[in-house]
Image 1 (cartoon, helix red, strand yellow):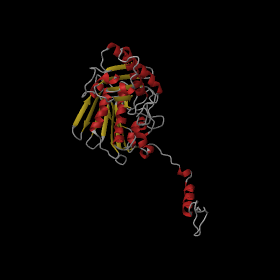
Image 2 (tube, rainbow, N blue to C red):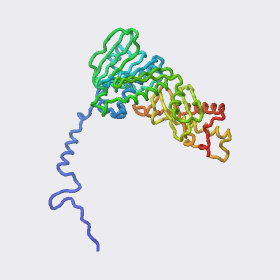
Image 3 (cartoon, one colour):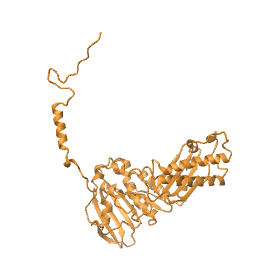
Length: 405
């Protein structure tokens, strides 16, 4: 026996409808459509976009985003060091939670800009304003987007900057990105050099405004490793503690620090350094007796936590170099398969650092390097460097039984 299905109708005995918007919903829909007009289009001026969507500029508003404010200011000081103008950077966390960053570089320029405003104010209140877009201020820079310090200003409850230039000390203050004073001369320059920036993160923006001493210390230690001869000092007035970082050994010292609690397979890290038109390349690596891989990559001192083309080039070169060496040394026989990338990265500790004129990062937080032209030079430099090192040290036990068994 078959049963008839209900027949679809446009109405029912009680007058209800199916398949159409109820009268009230239809009315609301027509009202919404009529409300969407030219006046609905908003234009965010100045630093308003940063406060409206902070995650687009610093990644998040949690502790990670909070510390990104420090990185942006410190990166500007590190840029001065890379350019050869600064030798000391100091970061101080004050008792009130504000952070002060000081360097002995050239200082932020002051003076009337063609726009009519002072250059110091423009740098701190206008997105994409800076000397890192080919204007001759920097050849190599970590803060390339020109939004760093202006974003910090926008997301700070207050910020004050002092710059020592042209025989005087100049200053300006801001509240949530808006100037509260003009650029003014506050005293003679004397022996002072560089820039001092002090800011208080805005509790209206961030989930927490408590800075971590250890988080900042780790980042500053990395910066000191990546810039041989640069003194970096960290002070915390909240707990009366401080640390200073200075490393002549650079990346070699960095790798040794990472392996300090491990049994290494060769005493001195392998070090590769080469200057190419596309980039200046530095790599240090050392094997230990563990099975874990511990590799850090940097581009213009920025820790590219998601890697990028420089890391891809390094990994390809490492695999090729060790396979070529294993064949030449008879460790791998003709019938043996090549070592895989996973094989050659067992027990590897390495730091890959490139410095280039025009890095292309994915996003303002700079987590991944995208420059396609960097992969080849890194691969070639590492292949040559590791090959030469292995030829000069044929007994190097980095290809032990665990990698070829």
